[in-house]
Image (cartoon, rainbow, N blue to C red; front, top):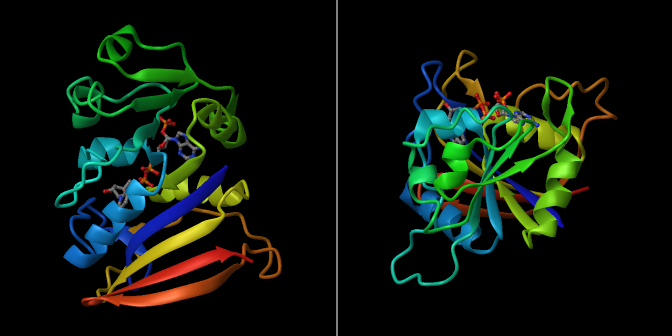
Amino acid sequence: MTVTLKLATSLDGRIATASGESRWITGEAAREAVHRLRAEHDAVVVGVETALADDPELTVRLPGYNGLQPARVVLDSRQRLSPDCKLVKTARDAPTYIIATTEPDPALVAAGVRVLTVRAVGEDRPELKTVVAALAAEGLGRLFVEGGGQVAASFVRCGLVDALEWFRAPVLIGGEGRPGLGALAVASLAAAPHFRRVEVRELGPDLWERYEKA
Ligand SMILES: NC(=O)c1ccc[n+]([C@@H]2O[C@H](COP(=O)([O-])OP(=O)(O)OC[C@H]3O[C@@H](n4cnc5c(N)ncnc54)[C@H](OP(=O)(O)O)[C@@H]3O)[C@@H](O)[C@H]2O)c1
C-alpha cells in the first residue's frame, strides 16, 4: 500500500483564496502532469469539502488515453455528497467510493456509489489506517490523495504519506487563503515530518517538486 499526496499551491502554500476560488492556481502543463499521475494510481482520494466546492470528476483526461480510470474516493463521514454532483452521476462509468462513519445512504447506493462504513475517531471521522486497509481490500493499494488541506494534514499526521507531488505556481495568495496543509500538531522541528527531494522539474511557469518520506 502506498499513499502519494499531491499539492497544487501558490508559492506560499495556499490551495484557494479565502472565498474558495482555486481554479486554476497552476498552469496547463502542471494539470496535465496531475492527470498522468492519476493514471498511475488505483484511486484518487479527496475530502468532501473539495468535492462540494469544486464538483470535480477526478478522472484521467489526456488526449488519446484509453487506459483504466482510477477509482474516486471521497472521505465524507456523514454522506453530505449530493446525488446531483458529477462524482455520483458518473459512478457507473468509474468506480466511486464514499468513506463514511454512518450506514450507507440508499440514494447514493442506488446511484452506483460504494459506501464503505469505517470506524470513527476524533471528530467522528473515519480512521485513516482503517480506510487505507479497507481500500486495499478492494484492490486499491496505490492511493493518490488530492486534498484539500484538512484531508492532506490528516494523512500526514497519521504518518501515512510515502511521497509528495508538489506543484508550485509563481503566485502569492497570502495568509487568509486556504492552506494546502491543515494543522499538523508539530511539537518541535525534530518531530516534524521530513521528506527528501528526489526531483525538480519546470513545467512552464510552475515547478514540480517530488519528495519521498525521509
Ligand atoms: N489547489 C488544489 O489543487 C486544490 C486541491 C484540493 C482542494 N482544493 C480546495 O481546497 C478547499 C477544500 O479544502 P478543505 O481543507 O477545506 O477540505 P477537504 O480536506 O477537502 O475536506 C475536509 C472534510 O473531509 C471530511 N473528512 C472525512 N474524513 C476526514 C479526515 N480523516 N481528515 C480530514 N477531513 C476528513 C470532513 O468532513 P466530514 O466531517 O463531514 O466528513 C472535512 O470537513 C476547496 O476550496 C478546494 O477548492 C484545492
